[in-house]
Each structure stands twice: as structure tokens, then as C-alpha cells.
Length: 152
Image (tube, rainbow, N blue to C red; front, side, top):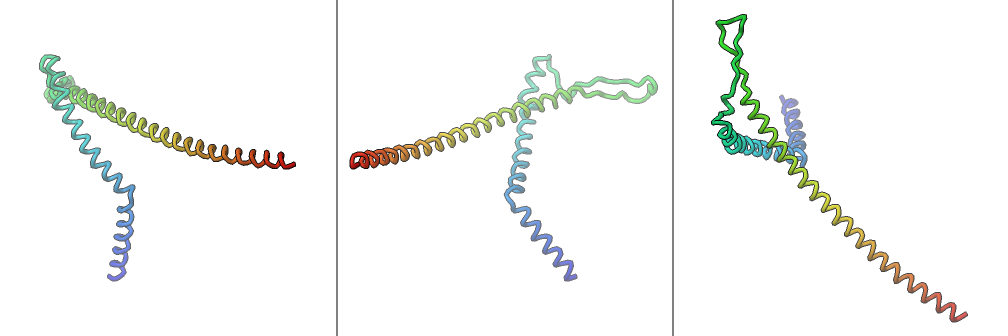
């Protein structure tokens, strides 16, 4: 029994160290935000985008768009329904998510480029300042050289 408790304590300690690392917590936060984002996009598609499109198409409810396929071999069986309206609904959802992620990636990319440009400009300024120091040292060298030339 004591050996089992030791094993459990070791496992709990290792799991706690694993779970408290930054990457795991970042991933968990990302999943939670992703789920919330998915719910918002789903509501956008269901409640905002599809009703006006359905209205423009003559009051179509996308969830109820189906094609009935009757079986000739088994005429007494109920028809199979192809729910193409649900498919259209999910395609629109995919397009909205893809567009949103594309815009986020573009924004993040621009922010990275801006930060890299600022860093490059900062490094250039530091190099420029160093070159000013080098100029002063060159002037001192030239002055010392001219003084030794005058003395000779």
C-alpha cells in the first residue's frame, strides 16, 4: 500500500509540473477561447447571415432543405433524406471562420513586421552612434598624427 501511495504522489507531482508549464496553460486558454469564438461564429452564421440569405431566396430555411430519395428496391421503406441545406450552412460557417482566421493572421503578421522594423531601426541607430564614436576616434588619431608630423 505504501508503495502505491508513493507511486501516486510521484505521478501527481510529475503531472503538476507538466500542467503548470507555460505551454500547456497557453494551449488550454487557446482551446477555451477557440470554443467561445466558434460559438460566436456559429451564432453569426445561424442568426445573422443565413436568415437574410434565406429571405432573399424566397423564405428558405436552410436547415430544412432536403432531397428525398425513394428506394425502388424497397418501396415500403421511408425515403432517405439528403440534407443539403445543412451542408450549405456548414460551408458558410467554414468560410466565415476561414476569413476571420485569415484576417487575424494578416494582422499578426503586420504586427510582427512592424516590431521587426522597429528593432532593425533601433539596431541601425546604435550602429550609427557607434560610428559617431569611431569618427571622434579618427579625428583624435588625425590630430595626434598631425602633431607628431609638426614636431618632426
